[in-house]
Every structure is written in C-alpha cells, then in structure tokens.
Image (tube, rainbow over all chains, first blue to last red):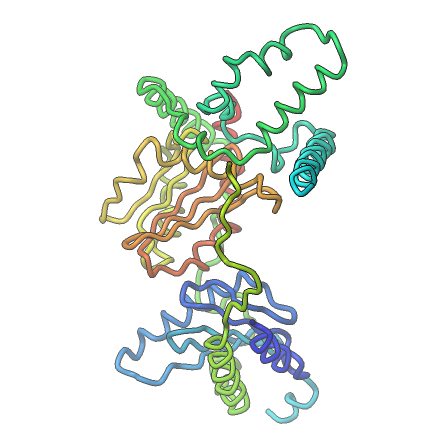
Amino acid sequence: METQLEKVLMDTAARPDTVGALVANRQGLCLVAKGDIDPNVSGIGMAIAQQVAKLEPNSTVPATICLYSGNKRCVIKNDGRITAVIFKQLTANSATGN
Amino acid sequence: MDYVHSVWNYFASICNCWQCTEDTGAQPNEPNERTHLLVDPVNHSPALRRSNSDGLSNDYAHSLPKKDDQNALSRLVQNTAINMINVGAMDCHSLEHQEYKDRIRVYSQRLHQQWNNVQHPSVSMKGLLKDVPSHQFYLSKPLSVEDTAQMKLFTEKALDSVSHIRIDHKEAVVVPFRIP
Amino acid sequence: MSDDIKKYFNGLLQKVSGLYVIQITDRDGVPLLRVSQEKNIDFALMPSFIPTFTTACDQASKLGLGRNKTIISMYSNYQVVQMNKLPLILTFVGAENCNTGHILALEHQVDGYLEDIKLAVTEA
C-alpha cells in the first residue's frame, strides 16, 4: 500500500547530509516520517509553507523554503496536495562545497 | 461446534479483559485507559439499568458473598459491562442548569485567584534572530541548488507514490455483526 | 478571568489560520476558558457537546488500542479537535480546511498552562 512512499522516504533519508524527512497531507497530518524528525513538525511545516506562499500570491510555482539554524537546516516545500519537510545537516563535504 | 468455539472465545476474551483491568488496578490513582472520564457513565446506560432492575449484578454486589462462584459471576457481569463498547450510554449525562452556572462561577473565581500566584512562563525574548549569534551570515545565505534539486525530486516522487496509495484488502471491508 | 491567559490563548488562535475557537472545559462541559474569532460558533457551547465527547472517549478507550487521547471530527463546514486532558477537555473548532497538524502541535505548547488550570478543577 504505502511501501512505495516509504521507499522514497528511505532513499531520501539515507543521504549522508539528510537527517530526516517527512511527508504531510492537505490537513497537515504526517503521512510518513523517516530518520530523526518529529512527526509533529508536519503541521508547523505546512503552516510555514502557507505563510510563505502569501508573499507571492500570483506565483504558480510552489516555493522551496530553507530555514538555517546552527549546523542544521530545514527545507520545506508545499505543492498544494502534499507538504515535504527535509532536515539536513552540514557534512564535511557540503561545508567545503559552500 | 462452531458455536461452542465462539462461546469459548467470548469467555476467553472476557477473562483477558478481566485480567488486564486487574493489572492496571495496581496504580489506582493513575488515569489509564479504563478510567472513566465521567463519574459513572455505565450506570446511566439504559441497557444496564435494565439489567440492574433484573437484579443480577445489583443483588450480588450488595449482598454478602454466599458462594464464591456467584460472586465471581457477578464480577464477570460487571466487568463485561465495563469492557463492553456501549453506544447506548452516549446520550445520557447532562448537568442541571443551576449547577452548570454555579460551576462556571467557582471556576472563574479560582482561576482568578490562582493566576495571581502563578509564575508565568510566557515572558520570552522577542525579536528577529535574537537567539542566533551571527545572523548576518545566515541572512546572506542563498538557497543551495542541491537542496532545491533534492526537494524537487523528493516532492515529485512522494506525490507520485501518495497517489498510488490504495487499500488492498484481502477480506470484506464491511463485516456484518452476527447478532441473532 | 485573568487577561494574561486570555491573551496567550488568543495569540495561539491567531497563529493557526482558520481556527475559530479554543475552549477549555471540565469533563462535564462547564467552560473555564474560551477564546474565539468574531465568527461565532454556537454549537461548541451546547451543553451536550462536551459530555458526548467524554463518553465517546471512554468507549473508544475500550477498542484495545490504549487510552483515547484525541478525537478529530470533520464536518462539511467545520472541524473539531478534542483532546482528553483529564480532568480537562480541550476543544478546538476550525474551518474544514484548517491545518489539523498545526492544531495538534499546539498541544505541547499549552500543556504547561493546562497544569495550572487543572488546579482550579481539582481543588474541589
């Protein structure tokens, strides 16, 4: 049933710079979460994405939001039907890359 | 044979429930899944009132335990009543209007008194990025191409798999209760 | 009613778009605190609404899945999220497309305040 979705999450969370990832539905309820991420983040993640969407009400392309804090960052995207949240961290590779 | 089997299962499940209520009875003050939110909603249920007037559980609950097995039986009846999901008990409990008003008054008084003695956790630092030492660094940070690419791929795949979610049931989804 | 706590809950109400009412009652539906948007939701005040939740919560706890904590009810115009915070009941009423996940996330934020409000009920 949801095995395909779980696999997508697993693949994403398996990347070395990714801490955790989740997908929320239209209600802001967490569908699936993998890695080190609190499922309760889903609602707030969606709320942030909705607020950001108000900045550009005429835009047809959904915004990708990135919140930086310390050595971690949170990437959020809401395309209307689902909201995706990824927690990422600085790794040795990406630190030199920046 | 099938019938006997189902009766046996029924009793086994009752005994299970009985055991688990006794287990949770170890900490009587802790609210748990068996704790009633209302004072005694079971007694308000019409179904049980009937059984009370039949005198089954009531008589044995109040009389001295003459025989152990009778006692056990009445406990069994009571425990079944507690563990049974009883939709009939749903529309019963309501407060007298006067009591309702009295309680509102008492609560608001108490809250008022209490709120003067309580230390409020609400005072917090307000301001943009006050908890971040070098916010200039973060404000000037661009969104990395890698992040956008990963997110784009992730949302596309996730959306695709979300739309593929189907319930593949192996048995009938709607099952009729075998009520005689 | 102290302004401070009302202000706090009003702030919460503003944070979630599409949330109309936050109400704290005791288990019989007697209100302790209620904040709402101008749009008035009358049914949340109906005396039978909260006791019905408490009984439903009781019955749902017997399904063998543990104690029932939250019931989310979706209606054509509203959604109602009710939380069992023994001896209190926390009720949220919002638009049907309101962010349910965000409402659920408020639970952890109000927990600290609920401890204080609980005292008003348990002192009886």
